[in-house]
Image (cartoon, rainbow, N blue to C red; front, side):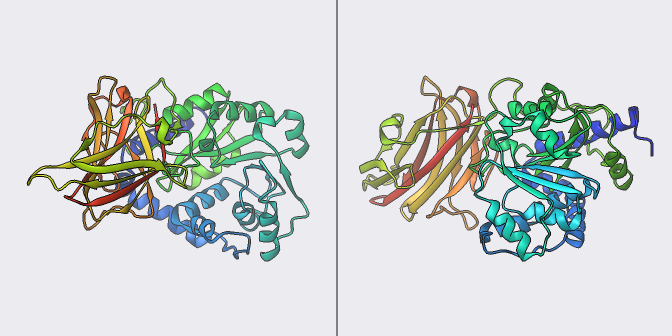
Length: 438
């Protein structure tokens, strides 16, 4: 198959269209639409990935994450894009799961792994010892990717640089990608991944959001040519790029095995999922009693208090009046924002028996409602006493929250978590963390 020129561009365009379509769906809907493709990816990963033996320094929680379907699929797809001829520079190598997998599945010529600190090096070395991996040709070093230079990179002479699950943790991914592009040679390839829009956003370590349009812009601004892009496990965008326009041999080999088909017609055009302007990053909210906004919800409440909580957030404790039959009792926690394109909150309801329902409401500078989500407990969804993270998008249902209004989210200046209480009932609500996208 000759992939030069027009045919290659058609494949890449088709791949972008697939990502654009999936990112406009909820995670659940996209999983249903592309179920056959994603199941096939996972089955192949399960069949072909080597099984690493766990090691003492690897936390059980991390082990569960590495072994879940999505991550197994992602790691296997990375392996398919590498070869035994590669000299790998891995930026943000983690606890050792990927290096260990590459040692068995790829057997690269050389491996250099760097991280911000040396806190994970012992885990990587222990992984190698437990799994009988020879690390005599490995390099492990402390390096901030913003400090990469052509001179430092050339010492390791990589054929490919890995930047997997890193950019979403950074407030300035543009600068990060430009720094790497400036440090590598034209023919050195970069394999990187970021979550698709609407995926893995409940992770508090993730700061930046990416739709297909933003990823294209990131690559263009860094002077990088996109040779391959695809959705993986309904979770990530995986890209192979370089400073050279010459098509890498590994892309030709991959395309012979499986050509990604688009889920939308060739004439379809989908605009950017994120607005073209603005800051697609989560902004943390200061949650202290003296920084909260004034609540407008205070009806039928006998007493209430707001105090700092040991998790770093705030706790609302309230007791409702008896009231007249049919009357309602509300109390809320309000905090200032500058828009509500996406809202992320970690919420716990330790005393929930007295709570009829809960809702999150946004208001503009004039006090008019701009957006709202309601949560009424059901057999499937209940209030979490120990807390959970919710990611709320205007007009979208998520984990028990149903959209009620999405008339003007961008104008939101105050967000409020409100509980409706039963007569004479007590309740407590803890807002542990909050962040939003402007």
